[in-house]
Length: 92
Image (cartoon, rainbow, N blue to C red; front, side, top):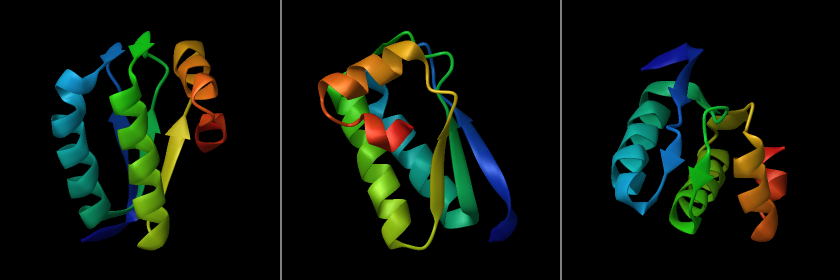
């Protein structure tokens, strides 16, 4: 297990239910291997509820397991979608 460095995951331009399972597996693997994981959201142009739910659950899970998951440069589209669902605080 690598504890020192944070691992970075870059979100795609379209984040939809079609890619939730793959991203879930990638986040889980990285949180097992690294003490910190950063999810970069600058490229996101479209995001659906399923993906937002995954990101929030991943953040909550990381918090409960003494891991750190943070969001880097969330796009305005990501923030707008999160705002509509009352989840913006997770991405601030």
